[in-house]
Length: 548
Image (cartoon, rainbow, N blue to C red; front, side, top):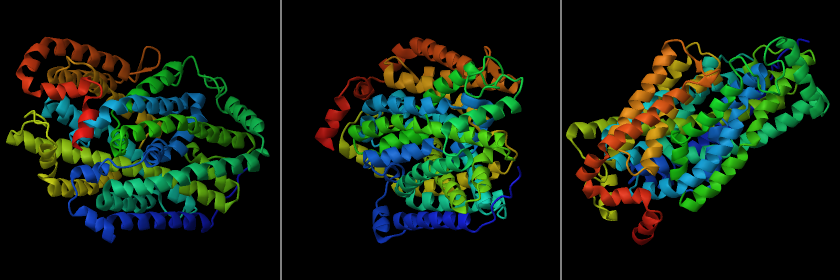
């Protein structure tokens, strides 16, 4: 049956209320008396990581809302609609990432705290004693991570378009919402992001549960069994004869089969080791214990991510009931509109907007930090011949403090400007014709994961060298991009291109590092204590207790 979409002011009013609260939070963190006082002596570390002072609850909410992006309720719902459980990989990825962050915290947080570091490339500069490793790591992460920025911008407009009953164009809706994000990220930094994301996470988690209960009650009489049965019935009709005729089992063939699912789980977990927002979350915490508690909560929240699969099944089930869904990626929004309840439509639009904001602001600030600190400032240091962090071997808290404060105002101002520039660039790219949003994130996963051998070797292998790290990243990216642009999309029956590429990267870093490690470590004997910080457990934590 065809039902007219809701033409009611209630959904847009609800979104305006949410936006008004966000604007107040942005003003409080950016322009209140307390905020202006805080900015007087603000360093880049303060702007990007809040001086490493947040508790576990705040860190968890920020991490959670980053995982639950706006595309979770648009692109991933549409993917489940079309391809079934092959799209549920992020449920396991989120849980696995939380556990990985738990074990990484003991190594990453103390080093970042002691040396006052703010980004993952910062740590790689310290470990490899190379600004070129830092530059290449940040360049790869920025180039591929901006894809997530683009997909989330499109989601903003989609939510506002449906909330306005189609009167507000997607482009205009994206522009309005994203402008607000740019303003509060640029002015308030991570303080604004922390406050807005904590609020957005609560809106998203509570709102999604309420909408799910409404949809099952309204369309399926409150019966989960009827919903799943109707979803399978619709899938059998829509995809008759195709491999995904059953949406609840993984296909043996086709593009979205078992190898595809395994690829997403394995590479999706690995890529979170280099995802800048996750590293920012680790550095936000006030100690290792808070990171661990938030990591365990993040792992548990992975179970909740299965909600987008349930929403996808709801959309399919409604089709079996005779409803017409025009765009599966907007299926959840259309379903609430078809239900005839403007409050529910307003709620779903609002929590999708909240999820998109939560991902966009943390992605935007972390990417801007990388561009400012690890690309522009780093290149300036390379041109001046400035040695890497820790090159002098000095371990005093006073010396580290002087380094952080030396050009603090310039670095923070530069980052604020880059937030605006990067936001405009991302918005312009979002205006182009895009394929299925989930497929774009697959490309980002393949490209970013190839930095993992450099990160893992730097953190856990004593013989890793900058020569091996650079060679690994160059070879791995060349293999991936070479296959991609030659038209190859999957290998070995459906596995991602990232697998052969990362294998080449691992072999390269091992071979080159072994060939260069003796000469490198003899030349860098002055940094022996720094290298010990990476491999002697408890050494850095003891230093922090004594000196900070």
